[in-house]
Length: 113
Image 1 (cartoon, rainbow, N blue to C red):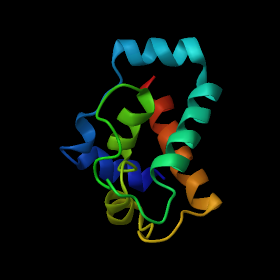
Image 2 (spheres, rainbow, N blue to C red):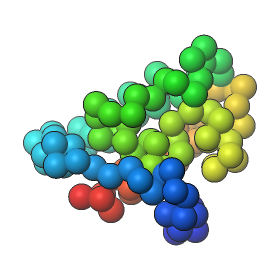
Image 3 (cartoon, helix red, strand yellow):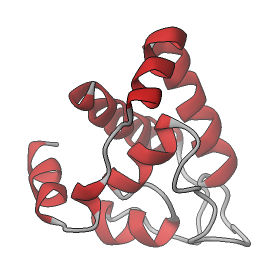
Image 4 (cartoon, helix red, strand yellow):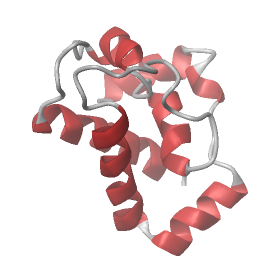
């Protein structure tokens, strides 16, 4: 994962995402376990299906720390998942792939707290 985060840090687009004070307060209020639950929920609903009608637009740019983390880690849409993580589009995500995505998101959140 270190190599991935190094590459993400070199991306002008990916490296511009930061947690706001409001995001950090929300994380502290809810706790990391609840944020992880939210991440699983978002990934299962927005990325896991084989076909996503609004792929590329399903992850808002703000509104929840997980959304910020998804853009920062290129786990925001199936195109980015393929480009950065080599997870193929057009297939349902496996439980292993979902776990990997959530772990990437949570690492980024932890590192940015």
